Image (cartoon, rainbow, N blue to C red):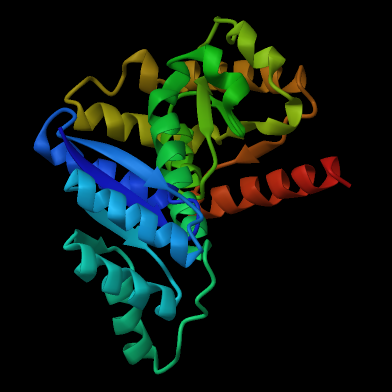
Amino acid sequence: MKTVIVMSDATGETAERMVRAALLQFGPAPAHVRVYSRVRLESEVEKIIERAAELRALLVFTVVDNEARDLVWRLVERYSVEAVDLIGALMSKLSTFLSTEPSGVPGLLHTIGEDYFRRIEAVEFAVKNDDGADPRNLLKADIVLVGISRTSKTPLSTYLAQKGLKVANVPIILGMTPPAELAEVHEHRVFGLMIQPDALVRIRRARLQHLGMPEDSDYGARRHVTEEIGYSREIFRNHPNWPVIDVTNKAIEETAADILRIYNERTRDSFA
């Protein structure tokens, strides 16, 4: 099996993930990946490149210091090693475009990469835990949204996940007790979603029309909607420390801003 060597002056995690993501396009386990992180000394660089030559490996590296990058290219040429500079060309182009020199501080790429992958992980979490899909994961969530159908639980979950937060949502269903796991979630992480009856009736009837279903079904009937809202209010009264956000006629961004403000305040206070 062929080998790809990842060498970085930081953790190498971002470069490794990029390499592994690219390798997925070539079928299952097409190459072995070796990672060498926090490589700063010239002697270390030469040993790794010498090893790459022995293995006939492809060297993928991320080095932000210009002198260190020049050293890598000299050694790569000396040992006849195939190599890919993941960041050098981009930094050079940006330097010209911005008319300034890069800081050359190792580890900043890792920070950016970690933020990106945290968001991806959060979005995957939101998708897997939409509409109460797996109550066992509620304790892993940063935020849990609770509300009756059509109170924007799913779009809010997705929007907040793009901020890097793991969000789960739980539907309130008339006459049904919420999952027991919800009671175990810290009350500062749970947010109730409320909507005014007239607005909800309009939204649900439009949804029924879109699906080609009768508008007078229980789902869109004012009496049923009123009962559902009343039941959700009862649940919220039993949990007075859950903030309840009225989503009536609000954009997703506006509701999310309210949730984030309260969440950040509570998170900050808990560490004060």
